[in-house]
Length: 250
Image (cartoon, one colour):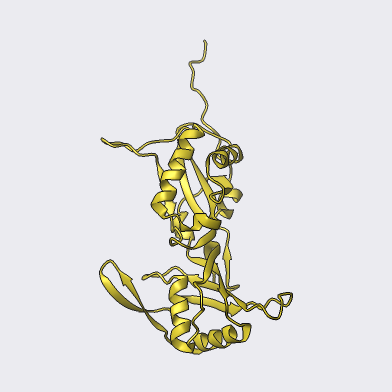
């Protein structure tokens, strides 16, 4: 069995697809591309696809990950091209590597997000960010399946900064925030940080923020960066495909 790890995107209107909708679209693409999938056992076999830390519905992403298991060896780049021909624009496979290590999900410990706040001035965003960062705790509430839950949004934030755009027209108010958040329990999402900014600095964008995940991977405490989770698979020794076993002639 060969395992392939894929990085894919959710762009444009496709950011509003739910994770279940993506699963259906991806499994249809697997069938159309005639990928030799491995299946689970039991009365209702399913293709062996492992999804890792999907972005919330309504957010865009440049860095979603999954892993598939095949019954026959395939070239990862060729497989990526075939799947892209069968997926709708906006759901794009941008990277494919053979899995040569274990624990992909364990390497997804942080995410880098971009928050676009239309109608918000840069100075207002900078003031709110400063107030958020100096706070020891920032309690926010979110409705879950078990009711309202209160938790600290500040502890999970490794970096939050405003990114001024000097080339933007002076009459255009649009603040851009860059956010690095650790994957903790309970999970802190970008909308939780926006709720925290509203709580500590009364920052309330007039329109919903456009949120995009730019990267996710292992968080490097020394540099404060998020590293590529597929790098270890690229660096590992390639796994040779299985060869047919025959009987040697005397």
